[in-house]
Image 1: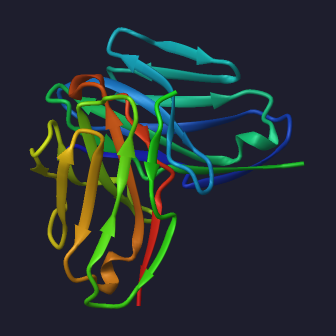
Image 2: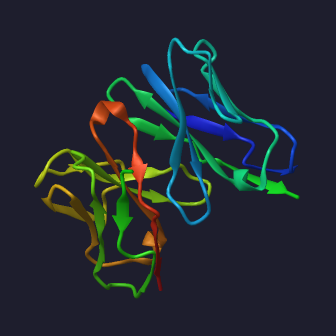
Length: 111
Length: 113
């Protein structure tokens, strides 16, 4: 069964600090992995997409990494801002286009 | 910008009532999806549609039905709402199934009493 596990479930960080979110998956065959950001009361919005051959991809202060051998991805947030407070969802796509969603990591940034 | 609009942000219904959740997208996307989102669980696919009048069951279709009479509109129907259907419902659309770039609506939070 295809599964996506995210850790931690939640975290609190001070404004200006960095943090890293983890995503482990068992989806096979693997097509791509996408990170979404979901602000409270809104739908998820795509941050990055990574295919099998990509190791790192950045979007501003967000950097995603992918290790296809160990089936792990991480999302690193640099110099966090209050607006980074949100839920971050890891989504893995299989070759048949079926999507598997992680439960998300809730990030709270405090001033 | 692609826009996916869900007509109701918050609804409170009673057990046994029929519930309609409406979703409209304005970018001529072929594919539309309904998910439910519950704490501690990932998004779960209820139904999806790749074309007008076409529908396919997702992972948790029991207790739900859908309607897609027009390309831009995809409705989720709860024929007889139950308390275990209290949830956040998210509608999404995409240009093609393989792209998996989903554009989500803001969600409809349904409470069934």
